[in-house]
Length: 323
Image (cartoon, rainbow, N blue to C red; front, side, top):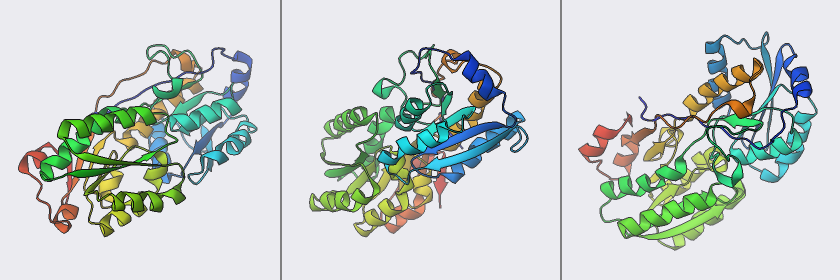
């Protein structure tokens, strides 16, 4: 059960290289290259489900070559260059920061971003007509950050100090920080805001949050942190901190709540862009689709473990309750 779903599009190169594109689109099967910070096999499966629904068959119509950097942003440029040398028909890259690295390595190759804050960092200049080589699925997690504290204070009315764990490499970094500031001002709580840029920094950030006496943890959207979610949840559980994040994958692994985009729906939808581009569409002519659905997930089992009572009003709002 879902709540609001959305799609978005970006552009960054002004010239459409027709000859180079025609050569790539003439491949049979088409080569689709995958570039990400984490492997995310479950999301690749969702993309393939979307392609199958359109009628594209793996092996006959397309093949996939994968590369990921294990959360190390500084490894992406080398991986992007390796993929570019394969002359793919399309590169699937996410989030937007990864797409920019791919675009620098392969400026003549269409790039589809299945999820990312595409409005930040100058990736998208015109939502109606991006006019470039990058397109795909946007998210609006920066706009939903304020809801996290609203839900937490409903469950924990005596909450005094909240911790935030964020990703300093995210193009929407300032948007998220501003949303966090607005939320703590609105609910009159103290905040402790920690950022990481690499997976190995998580433990130190956790220690600093614990030293500041936070009572719960909000995890801000990050491709690094989603890949490390089990470790983040385990560390928080040792402190008995409720965790709220942006994706349903978090409560599925033991976090208390999630509110945000359905990532699997985004990746299935990305197949539409791939299909259009393989049929000759210019990525810059594909308009950005705005959000239609978000989902709110509650892990009732985690709430019970933490001794928290979920008000009936929140249970009624939930798209899914994990018992």
